[in-house]
Amino acid sequence: MTKIALIGTGPCGLSFLRSLHQAEKNGDSIPEVVAFEKQADWGGLWNYTWRTGSDQFGDPIPNSMYRYLWSNGPKECLEFADYSFDEHFQKPIPSFPPREVLQNYILGRAEKSDVKKYVKFNTTVSSVVDNGNGFDITYTNKIDNSVHKDSFDKLIVATGHFSVPYIPEYEGMNSFPGRIMHSHDFRDAEEFRNKNVVILGSSYSAEDVALQCYKYGAKTVTIGYRNNPMGFNWPEGMKEVHYMDKIDGNKAIFKDGTVQEMDALILCTGYLHHFPFLSEDLKLKTHNRLYPPMLYKGVVWQNNHNLFYLGMQDQFHTFNMFDAQAWYVRDIIMNKIKLPSDDEISNDINSWVSKEEALEDAYQMIDFQTDYCVDLCSAIDYPKIDFELIKKHFYDWEHDKEANILTYRDKSFSSPVTGTTGPSHHTTWLEAMDDSMATYLDTK
Ligand SMILES: Cc1cc2nc3c(=O)[nH]c(=O)nc-3n(C[C@H](O)[C@H](O)[C@H](O)COP(=O)(O)OP(=O)(O)OC[C@H]3O[C@@H](n4cnc5c(N)ncnc54)[C@H](O)[C@@H]3O)c2cc1C
Ligand SMILES: NC(=O)c1ccc[n+]([C@@H]2O[C@H](COP(=O)([O-])OP(=O)(O)OC[C@H]3O[C@@H](n4cnc5c(N)ncnc54)[C@H](OP(=O)(O)O)[C@@H]3O)[C@@H](O)[C@H]2O)c1
View: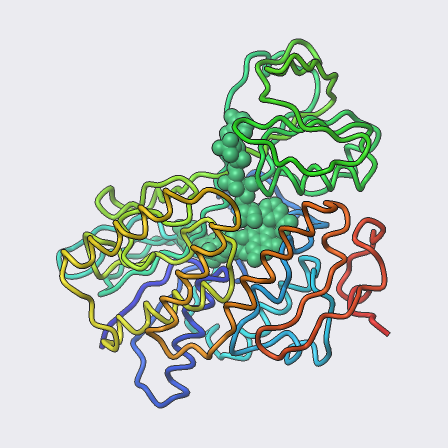
């Protein structure tokens, strides 16, 4: 029987386990799978921890989520086609849930799938080499520090790519008297109340960490972009300026001449695709982009068709795209999808990559990734989901953010699975300080 190693049980790994469960339910005989998860529980980044730095075993903490994080896109855009929000919560809920609510949804489906039995928790994969027929894998049980080796026919890498921070160096950092951190280590903004905060970056972390600082009472928030500003209508006390040149004492000096006193510097400078456990020939090397090269249909390693990656793209679409990828990989492994010739594979990759390289704005990027999801779904039996509606939701969401970055999370969207429109939340995002699941779900 084919033996699969799955590394990581974040949303992508869980999608793959779900895909096997669904195949088994449909009467297929499924391959053997062993899932390795270095954390004590599944859920990946959604498995929040107060910890930063290392865990109690000395391993780097993979989690980058913060205490008061809310979904930054409508939940209707990421809904599982085979497990709706209505089904999970037994009632309609608003469109932008806090972290704990989304985690509950993701794990709810996983727990109903009877797949935990496949997972080795507290187990880190430390080495993978191609043995000509498959892969030799070395892994460590962190609890008793025992090292094990095993061989597998297929390998699925689902280790995420928002865990290892990219941390640039600026002149003056060593002598800066305040706090310097990367968004990976940001857990909440309380410590920045009444402080002058400088944030570097112009993507989702910069936007949202800046908003967290504003919401929790920072005195000023100055965002330094490198290439393009986010350009939102920032409220009083927030501004966006061009690129930090250096630090002089407690002052940030920007290329556009701005000099800003700062108490804290938060680097929202993104993450590295980092796979220290893979031998060089198997390692995906890319920055954060919508179509990393070397991956047929975004998932099959071009040079070794027994190796698959899940979720390595930059992401507008998330959970249902991860499902589509997982179903697709499952069907290749179970010989339901036949791979074309090497030339066709190469042409297909090149065509997606060149389309991606021509994209000019966020709307085109949404179209591109939606087309990618539709393309995958045309080959699999993932339940039908209305990607045209999801695309429209993403467009509206972009417009909402442009109109008012403080209120976009107060909007409602309709489900592509059940058609239900999310009710308005009882408290606006800006005023909601208690984002516990109990308070959020109290929709009476
Ligand atoms: C701050 C932040 C906020 C986000 N907010 C949202 C949001 O609101 N909505 C949304 O849809 N998406 C959001 N995302 C995007 C996020 O990428 C996805 O939601 C999702 O977590 C990706 O799933 P994944 O399985 O690919 O990776 P991860 O969630 O990172 O899971 C990877 C898993 O692999 C395990 N692992 C890694 N290396 C090894 C190893 N060597 N051995 C064993 N196990 C290993 C890790 O412990 C982890 O459990 C956010 C990302 C970040 C960084
Ligand atoms: N739910 C939420 O609310 C939430 C919150 C935060 C993050 N997220 C998710 O987290 C993921 C990661 O987002 P991310 O923003 O951390 O990473 P990202 O999207 O990869 O963006 C990295 C950013 O770092 C900037 N950068 C890199 N080096 C820099 C430098 N030296 N100086 C200034 N800027 C620099 C890049 O600028 P250039 O563009 O100029 O290259 C880019 O803007 C996304 O999927 C996002 O959706 C979600």
